[in-house]
Length: 132
Image 1 (tube, one colour):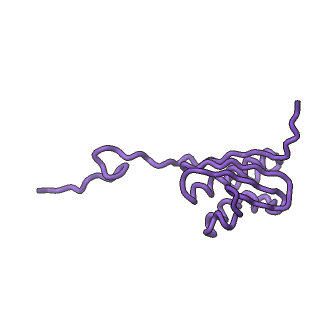
Image 2 (cartoon, rainbow, N blue to C red):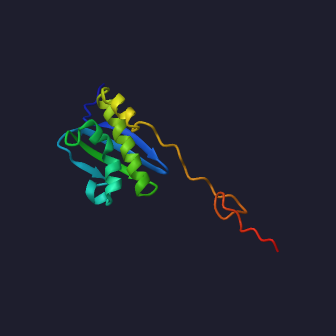
């Protein structure tokens, strides 16, 4: 029993952020958590980062995109959205795989924040040394 679902899903993660991306052929409408793209990402760096898969594949106005993103900060959320869009585009069209992979957009950035250790100020920062 096949369900007639027009959406293609992709999941992206970066730092502690998770983005669930749905794309479907359309006119270029881009919603993130119910807000417009420009309203959600205020800085040019985060906008550029989140849109990069669409710019590389030259499909900016070919898909309607709906994203649910949570956790982390703005930079991590932009990276998660980027990875989710890239994965969804590859599921839609296999020809995009090599292009996105060559630009490093299908590789998950696995860096996470190191936990704080007891007896230290931060993860690695120790107390100031005192001679006397």
